[in-house]
Amino acid sequence: MGIGKRIKEARLNKGLSQEALARLVGVSKGTIGNYEIDLSSPNEKTLIALMDCLNVDANFLYQDEMSDSMKLRAFGGYEKNSLWGEPLLNAYASAIRPTQEAACAVLGIPHVQPDPLFKPEVATCDMLVYTFPAAAGIPLSAEDDYERMEFPCSEIPAGADFGIRIRGDSMQPTIPDGTIVFVRKQPEVQNGQIGIFMIDDGALCKRFSRRGEQIILQSDNPKHKDIVVGEHERLFIVGKVLGYR
Image 1 (tube, rainbow, N blue to C red):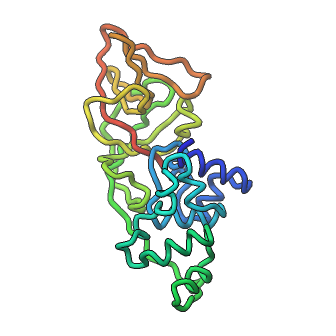
Image 2 (image 1 turned 60 degrees about the horizontal axis):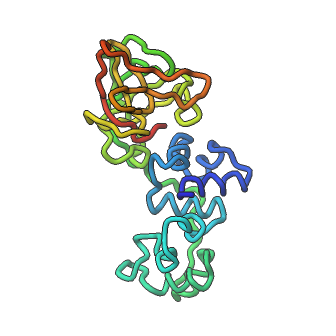
Image 3 (image 1 turned 120 degrees about the horizontal axis):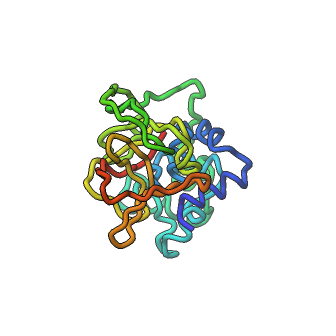
């Protein structure tokens, strides 16, 4: 079980929906969904917020991915050469997941309550988003319409080249209807990866599978049939889906 499944397990144990957790952490529902299916990983700041909201520690989230000696070093910023250094690691080792007050006491520094009215500025990034729907059900006619949209930079996966709007439910629950997926342009995808594909003039969001010479574009929703690419059909791989919002 990876960190994504651990986040989902902790969220369900707290009785929270993805939307509710997203509001608490300060990200979008799609971002939480990306974490839970391991399409993307939270940065350090978001990871700490997740642990606070879910009342879990790094040992819980990373228990399946790290050795015992590494579990308390799950935060890159808290290693020996960081600003906080070894004392904070010792605080985590002794208290597992201390409160801010407890950590400050170990470090011998004053604890200052944050201003509840303070709202830090959120860095945004400009992204090209194709507005024709990429069907998650059946091929649709692809057009060249697009727009430029701003997103919080933390919600755009590293390496994404553009976004594309999804219509249809064949990739649910992995990718909900109406979301925007972020895509990295590349000519190939591996078996099991989700990508954007063109068959003739239709745009599709599907999971790629190659069986010998046969290519199958699979649906995650069992209600929808997979698409077997015919011998005379023109298949073009647009790129790999890195995440959605």
